[in-house]
Length: 187
Image (cartoon, rainbow, N blue to C red):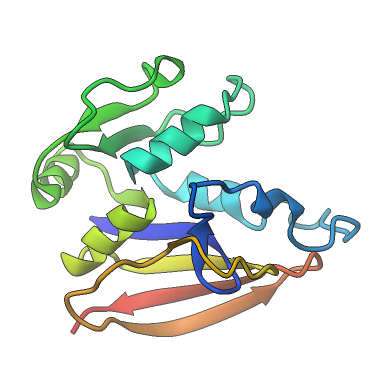
């Protein structure tokens, strides 16, 4: 089963402020830029290529805080698992949209694979790090916002091994964001 990452960071590699805020994503870059040729920087195309998602609890909390309407929900009807050892019930506004999971990540991937899922979107810093440490990530798309936060929650936590990134491609968007796509080669 393919597992990939699609995430945005600040130019200095943070996915959120120290308090978990991501509002800076909406203020970074040039708001006057003509983004008509790719307004979401490839997100809809990426979501169309995945059939399930695995995110961390903190990621779920951030999404829940947005109080998205059904029309704003960006994940369509893909199956979403939220990893948590402490929370067993999703927030009210995410009930029916996400399923909580506590347990071995490798077993979850095996289960999803046996159920016919082919491509998992992995989101959330700690979750991405855990998947990398288990050598489960095949591909990463990291979009760098033109802002330096100076501190915050880093994309990557402690790694058990170095990870080689290969076959990189980069896209510079008119608003100043730069997206880099990598294949992941685990040693």
